[in-house]
Length: 319
Image 1: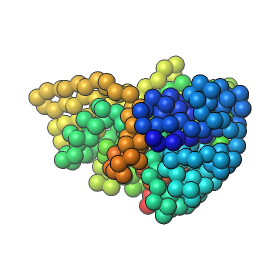
Image 2: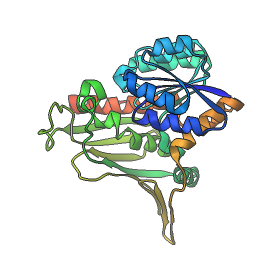
Image 3: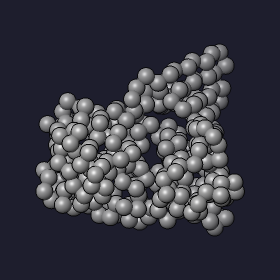
Image 4: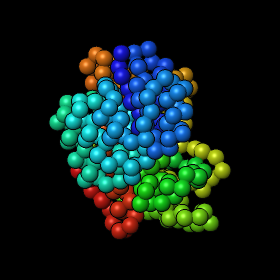
């Protein structure tokens, strides 16, 4: 049995706790949250020990894998502590708010030899796998992407110093799929503004944004991000000569001159992520991890670079 611990019992933490509990190879051993009542409630529901201090949990619990499901400003050195103990990791996005500190964490993790996944769950969609397979021998020329939704009520999400803004904390999922399906971003230029939602208390993040980017293949792309709508829409359109692949939410359409084929997702991508990580730990097959910690770092780097471009008015080149 793989002994699992989770830091952060609400939101996405609760989703991962349930999926870990339902995996036949997992023993849910410990749950930690600064909210003692929430930690205790989740621990009692799933038969685990509970903690309010993550360092104490790592010291007292015997764990094989740790899920870090807390806001990006709260991480401290949790990842380094786990890596030093040989505990495998799944770290929710975004991995942090400072590229240098996350790069350091990535090196510590790599040097430790543990398996480390990031929370880019959309890579585990069955429809994304179909798109990935179709595109493997295709030359991409242009990409259009968007993530436009409603405001998030969570207080820390509204503050740039705590969340990094919508692109870093939320729309990052779409930008990560662009990287996964189309290649790394080498240069970008961004415009962002707080235009319409400034009646929300304590909000200081842009509510609209546009990012123009260049991929390592030379393909060009554009992405829109915002939370000025009453509903949620996200997607990517990937175009080459005489073909296009359209991801609309979790549905994918493959279109060429002769036909259009539509695939609707039939899988739980959160569960797929956990099952892949547990299988990777059990078998040692790291190829099962579709979104590594290093992948998460590269996507974070791109979103932080977009913030920098929007602030300076200058294009930014990426590593």
